[in-house]
Length: 323
Ligand code: PBG
Image 1 (cartoon, rainbow, N blue to C red):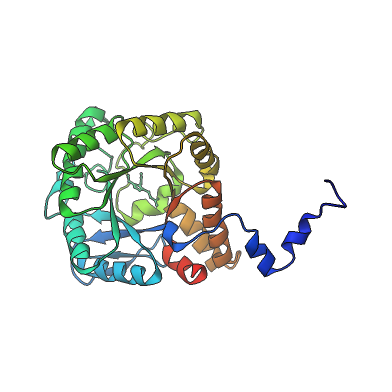
Image 2 (cartoon, rainbow, N blue to C red):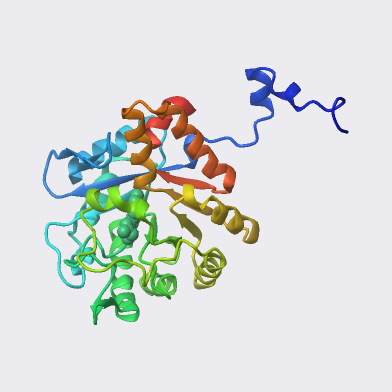
């Protein structure tokens, strides 16, 4: 029925009625908090490009995870900044590597927290690319061999989930095979299936010290102009054994999130990346927006678009609002 019988404003009358008809509910269960860890002790270094965030050492990381848990966060995503890097990123599968030690430390002291380990090489290679370089480009199949090793090492350390972010073809299959052959058939794989070659990663490259030393990532990460291709990436990852698929970044890619949700009935994650975080923080600092409201509106939009879970640097800031 048209106006005047139908008046949509009736259902916007007050807080109670708006709450009753609200279609999207963001909760702390939806959120995953990223953490940056480097070596040392007692470290809590502010990240200049990301106001309000810090780099931790394995001991202070445990404290941070505990404080996140008190806020209601149930899952963290770990990124490691190793002391030394090499050509192939072999330190990434050292059993005493920064992430392996951190996972064991968190698991020892904290119960009921899911640890997701990001699996990539850009933080571990001297050239800052996400794999083994041959002729100035990342060699896909040589990188897969290293990928399998890193996956097994992270699983052995006690990670609950492995999240490969390198955008190599066949990456999920290589990980699934490596895990299964080593007794980790129940290990969950959350694949960065549709990861775009995005300039929104700028602040992260400073936080994780992983900017490529030459060229860029456009021969492996996706072209921001493409959408059908994201569906192909997701389909292949699911065939190879991914349990959860991901779209990254989130806010400039809400259409991709929605298309994947409509086309596949699988758990879908979205990564609300560093640039999306810092733009809001910096604009709020400058007094041009209400940071808290813009944060809530943005993360809610990612869920409304179809994400079942959201990796976000805002997890702690959202806690008092969502509780
Ligand atoms: C590394 C990686 C990146 C991010 C997560 N894992 C950077 C990149 O691909 O250059 C970005 C996360 C963010 O910007 O918050 N493969």
